[in-house]
Each structure stands twice: as structure tokens, then as C-alpha cells.
Amino acid sequence: MDIEILGALAVQENGVSITPTAPKPRQVLALLALHADRVVSASALIEELWGTTPPRSARTTLQTYVLQLRELVAAALDKDEPQGGTPRTAKDVLVTMPSGYLLASGGTESDVAAFERLSGTGYRAMDAGDFPGAARQLREALALWTGNAFADVQCGEQLEMEIKRLEENRLCALDQRIEADLRLGRHRELLAELTVLVNRYRTHESLHGQFMLALYRSGRRGEALEVYQRLRATLVRDLGLEPSSGLQRMQRSILTAGPETVAAPPAAAKDRLVPTS
Image (tube, rainbow, N blue to C red; front, side, top):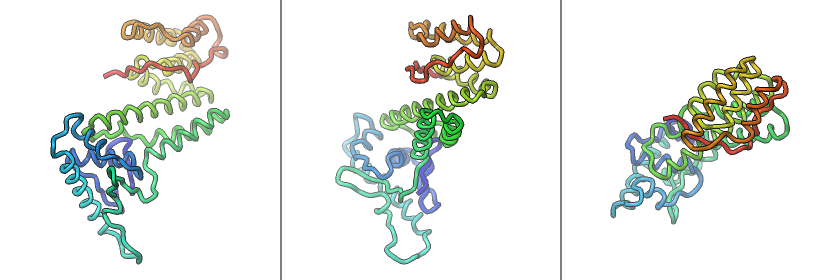
């Protein structure tokens, strides 16, 4: 089974799409695909579909959606060439459990699992000081994202919560990949990307600090200081906060020091995230 979540939802069995077009069954498949090979409780699926006020027929209607998904799976399995042994059935792929349902991936890795594996390898490389390896692994992980997670799925509370978690993981990987590239002296190559990112994440201090550093090392000291002033104005206006002490130290260093003595802000510092609408 091929499962793609980091963009438009795409689930294939035997090379055939089993992704329904109807919004509600699509939601069910999305939550099952995200938690492939793990049981998703019927109550979680019902909450995803109808929130805290489900209709009386919720459980029966959920069973109908599961049957519709199994029909798509069965059609995909019909494409299998006979190879001996007991063929899989739709109930083997979309399994009914005592408390809910399980989507059996057949041992394949979803794009979410691949992202988590690659980004984890990248983080360990960063910790070991292997910046080329970290940049490579994290870039490969981020390349799996083709858009916003579940971009074409009508999402309820459960999926919205998961989208926020996935986006936070994506942003952490991006932050660390940029940090690795800065360590490798790729400041000029980062300027265009960081210009976009600081406009999207208007209060993300780490990204602004990385942009300031990249600008300063590119000989654009005045622009680096302007980035700090814009960030400070936004933080004060939107959150009533001053920039962190680490970012303030960076601003003072840019004012007084040479480029080689200006360090990046601590990557572990907690950032304030307010993306633009």
C-alpha cells in the first residue's frame, strides 16, 4: 500500500487508488491512513466526522463509510495476479477491531513515516556535528512535502490537531536544515528562501535570526538590522513581547562586531509562531 499525506491525500492498494471522492469517507480514510497499522477507535472517527454532537445514526453511518472504503479496496485487490496461497481480502486491509478499525499497510512506509525517519537521522547528524549529512537528510525529508498535509481533505477536530502537529514537525526540520546550511557557509543561497519564510512566520524568532545572520554574512548589515526592527515591532504589537535575549544579543553583535563573530541564535529557543493568513 502506498500512503501519501504530506500534500493531497493519496492512498493506493496494488497500484490502484482507494481514495474516495466523497468528503466523509475521505475523512475516515485520512485518519486511518495517518495511523496506518494502528487501531483508530470508532469514537475518534465519529468525533472527526461530527464533532461533539454526532447524530444518533453516527455508528451505523460510520460502518457504511467503512463498507464503501472496502469496496474500493476490493476493486484494487481484484487487479492482483494469482500467485498461490490465500489472497488478501478487503477485510484484511481494512480490519474491524473490537474498538475501531485498522488500515493494514502491508509493511510499506508512508510519507509521514519516511519524513519522521529522515528528519530524525538529520537531527542526530546535527548533534554529531555532521552538518553536510544533516543538511542532506533534512532536505530529503522536507522534499516529501508537496503541500499542506491533507490539503484536499475536509478536516474535523482530530485531523486539524494532527495537521498542526505535522506542520510543527515540518517547521522544526526546516529550521534545522537552514541551521546546517548556515554552518556550511551557504548564507547567500538561503536569502531568497528566508525572505519568504519570515513573511509567512512573522514572529518566528529562529527564522528571523537566521535571516539576519545570512544577510549580515552577505554584507547587508543594514538590512539585517531592519529585519530585527520589523520583528520587534510585530512582537510588541501582536503579542506585547520583546524579542528574546538571544536575538537581542545578536542584534547588538551585528551593531558592534565583525561578521565572523556573530553567532546564530540558539536553535533550541522556543519560538513564537504566528503565520500570516
